[in-house]
Length: 125
Image (tube, rainbow, N blue to C red):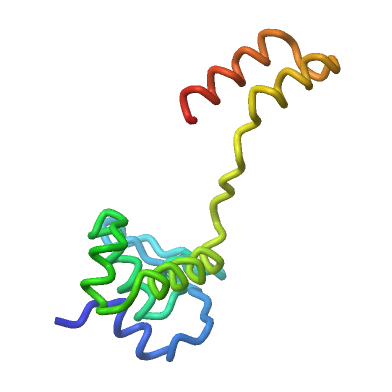
């Protein structure tokens, strides 16, 4: 069974497109303007299948190797390429305790702010 997104991808040939009208089925409301596709929808059909398989395998590269019949470096290279295309979430590193203490020492933050940052680092580290 062909999925609707596969028809759209085939129709556009994976070329860049802009959505100009969105209609809410339940309410009969239509919104017109220029809307970009969400980052995942802008991927080629092949890359969308790869991302879906990665999610279904819970991020297991071993399962991805078996599913696609390719090696670990091939899976990693593709993931690296896709992560560059999906640069929509900024995952900055949390400051280290030593950096927090240096900022505290320089008077750039209060003791309370420093303690909160250290708690966050412990909870996410």
